[in-house]
Length: 160
Image (cartoon, rainbow, N blue to C red; front, top):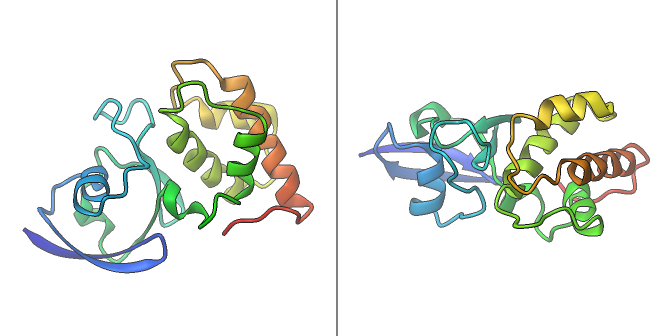
């Protein structure tokens, strides 16, 4: 066991865990943040996507020791009340079917919009291709990202 200091959803935390424990299991099992999902355990599906210092990463394979002194944002930390433009667009367009991959999809999209506030359809498709949706809601995912980007661009979006 080791103590790792990390900022999670804006709160500085001292986490006691084996240094090789994946961030996903620290989030879910140690801290009770269950928004990031376990899908494959091999960084292939994207269900576990969180932001590490603003970059979308696969939490299922990244050890907690690699997050020391850094900032992690999970779907729970995207906004306090679900008002982030991506979360609003997801609801308004009724994007999820089963919903299992959606936290990872949203977090991947958040990283995209942070680096590119007006992505093209091709850029959205290329970025989201890394996150698998077994229900095939990719067209709705693309539309929700475009809707959120428009709202952020005109300044009418919310969230943090």
